[in-house]
Image (cartoon, rainbow, N blue to C red; front, side):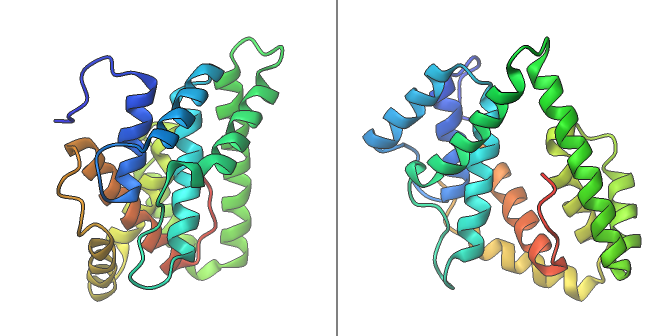
Length: 204
């Protein structure tokens, strides 16, 4: 179970999501807490902020030196989160269901990117098609991660084990996190190393 109570606040959701990617600690600093509260006051769904945190975390991990963790502060996510908030607000103007419109636009862009990638990298096309078929029942917001995890399972055993080991190194210091945060962290780090190994762009 997660340590979060049922009906947790927006700030608590942001904190739990962020520490899953930071990999240490259970609390936000006072400055990070103020930023989470500012995002809560904007009134966007938590999923919009979560997308920005995830983008920032993936970029930080990709650019980190060997032995470094990725994110250190929530403030490092500000640019990515506020870009997601702006996109949501731009699409929300006059839309009867802005969240549905945003998801529909994302799905169209995702499918177009996937088609371009499989055309440019035919050696990976079958693997991605099989992985995408297996992830089809997942909700849209979790589908790309599911595709990456299924792609990992379809790789040859030695390559698969090597990627699991690489992901485990990044998760080594997360015992103090909540069960939900540990689960998020494991899935996130596995997805990152698979994306890097397969040279996949971001479809999420």
